[in-house]
Length: 195
Ligand SMILES: NC(=O)c1ccc[n+]([C@@H]2O[C@H](COP(=O)([O-])OP(=O)(O)OC[C@H]3O[C@@H](n4cnc5c(N)ncnc54)[C@H](OP(=O)(O)O)[C@@H]3O)[C@@H](O)[C@H]2O)c1
Image 1 (spheres, rainbow, N blue to C red):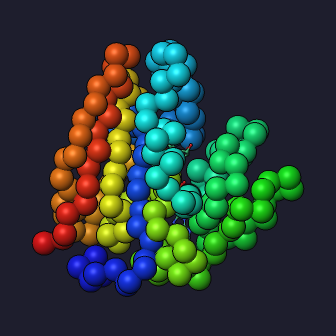
Image 2 (image 1 turned 135 degrees about the vertical axis):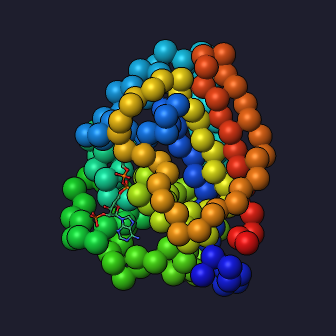
């Protein structure tokens, strides 16, 4: 499937995520305190580590249910009226008070290639793909064009990993690496055609 050119008009994915130096995106219980602390300590003036510029390039967000639950725990919904598609194989009742730009998608669109084709038909072109499990599935399916990883100078030792086993090698090309004064190192990679 990844070797097949995407259907005309299909949407493509982009990843923008922070990891510990040893590759975890959250503690084993999903905790992000380490990232919040690092962001708070590293905030110099208005520095947002490229987040706003990245968000300006996407027209929607696809996230796994675990990430959605985490975002809900923050209280205020942070994505305004950006279309957000939440993946879950289980019924996902949306709490009241959320914007109607959030859509829960069940198993009928479990295949990332089909989902991105469907999103393309709805006019989407570039979606932020978020959540470890979700990112791995979209990478494996060849649906990610760019991957921006911000490495936080901290070893967590254990946690929820960003990467894991892949069905085949996933070749990437390095586009840019930027280091920040607080020790964050941000690298952007682009996907290459699969062998
Ligand atoms: N460090 C960072 O920058 C960062 C960014 C984002 C998230 N996080 C953290 O990462 C953690 C979440 O990552 P995660 O790897 O646990 O999970 P995730 O990708 O957020 O969510 C996984 C869940 O999404 C659903 N799902 C994924 N693909 C699907 C598909 N194709 N079809 C149907 N459902 C699908 C399934 O839900 P069901 O089990 O309901 O079927 C699956 O269990 C959270 O703790 C979050 O805070 C960190």
